[in-house]
Length: 143
Image (cartoon, rainbow, N blue to C red; front, side, top):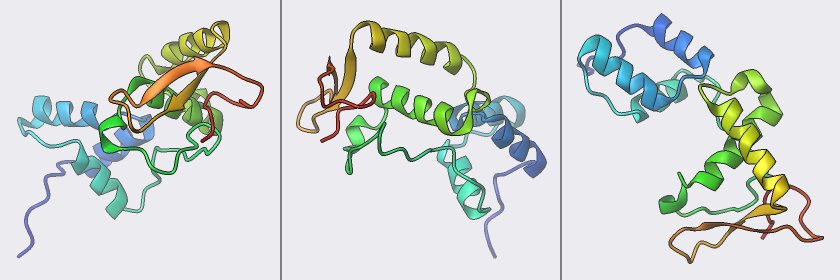
């Protein structure tokens, strides 16, 4: 017998996906509404099983690195590049919460500081802001 699904209300979950709610937000809602502690990965797995489109936008101009070490996956510069990729490909409406304001401030800061994101997997921080040069064509320095 298959284990009972932890998904309580599929229609509700689809509304959350459509609204672009983050998986961490969904997990927090499950704790509040259903008093059930679940991992955010539950929602990613559900999305995958149902064949629903992912939120991640693959943009080799903004995230040009083939391999990013797991310890660097959630660093702020990479997060901002992913937000910008989503905005470019899916429009401003694809951004949720404070993302539109954060993205606008970040883009302004990048322009004012003539900065690009550089990735060095051999450093603890991984991502660094460096000064733009004549070879930089977007927000990230290509390897």
